[in-house]
Image 1 (cartoon, rainbow, N blue to C red):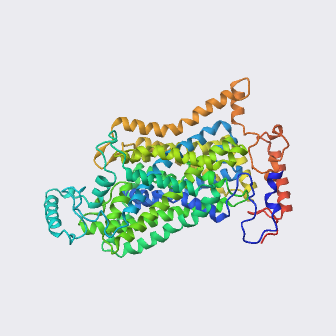
Image 2: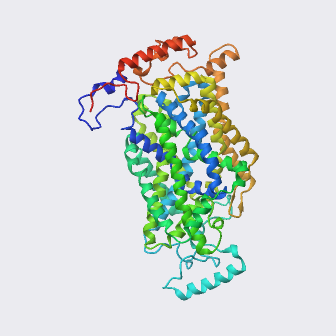
Image 3: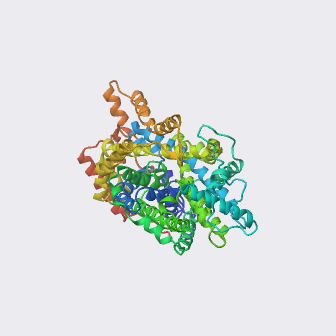
Length: 637
């Protein structure tokens, strides 16, 4: 077919130029493999690596947390990552289209879209706060350095010595705070915390009290969405170029901050706290649950983004290699960021004369309270602050690109007409505008409560359920043998035995355990001393269930609308792969996909048929002279 002619037609291209046509000319492909890997690293390495992972270590027994974390990575994270990449790459479709594999399960795709929508809404709010801090760092003196501002309370006591300009006032306030501290050791609040709470967020007294919109934050939210839209204006073609910078520069900043951090006094005690295992915590199911959900959360499994990014790969790309590179890079970044954060926390604890466990704030507070405060102690502190928040912005954007692209690709693939493919930019714009409007309530004075609620519920146990159902569908409904053959046809080798065992048994088991433990160990969320009211927790659960409930609803709909006179016939038809399930391009539809019409496409062939298909495929590969990642014997340089 004409669609498949792309790679063969343009052999006269100048070497090194991007003239070579996309393999999939209709949907487009990545400019090259590095773009895909960098985008996926940018997607997986996000704010969670900097403020969620160190905080989870901190809460779950330091080094003891690493043990369940790495076990979850090996038996659950990497296998699921590979599963999603191979799934998206095989069909060249986004998180809705891939469910042609078993149409009854398409609700899983809708669930992924719902999760990506929630995450996309609140993630951009966190990015916009980083943008706000970035702008506020463009000054000679960081505004959260001293306690003599209108928003400070008498409890405030700074880490930095008194300001020379206002020495008397500062001395009085220092004396006052010293007295207060004597009276109540735990009352001490830092200027950075008061700046964050009383000035930036101006937090209201509860989740129901919205108060006014914080206009500076709203402005930064608009900037954030505009940047995301501009980077995605040509889909993966434009975002693939941007990631060369957004995915690599954070490592430069992390390294600079790491070198600066470990040279500080007390840094060693922080790093010790980070690495010293509190082994008794290993028996706590919550620690395992946290480790697993962090792997999920940070690798981006079950969000739909991995399937979407991989769908723009060339058909024979080695996504097995990619999945290992990306997963390991992601986890190494988390551990590395932990060193950076904890060296600073140790320094703070040393300075304040308290234990490391008393320094950090919850979640985002780590990035917006503890770290900014430490930065005030460094020479040329505004420079470090600019670097740090610039890094946070880039980390956030890398993930945000993929979240938006996931939603846009799902919509475009679903409608699937040439008309909509040509107008993809407008869809991107529409999704960005809706995302911005839905984020507005999070810029009010109650925004932080809603942000924490979404972070804890919208993307927690629902991801676990979605992943579990995805494994069951691919391995047991579609059939593991069929899937292993699909992967072999695509990569030129079958998935390694370890992954086959994980996909079929270990990963679904681990996921089910996580789910059970999460339910047993459930505790309502709190923010500092604030306890969330019951009605807000109900909303949180509704968010969590809204993505899961797509699955049964769509299944029922599909069974009711399938062909067949009896229930069992309808069920069979709803579970059977769609006639156009398989590789997107005609030249890749070999073996059992090469059958002429939908009639021959019964995807439950006998073993004999499968063997014949394999033989035919092998012969074809031998003719093509390769079994690796390039099946085209084109004379390009």
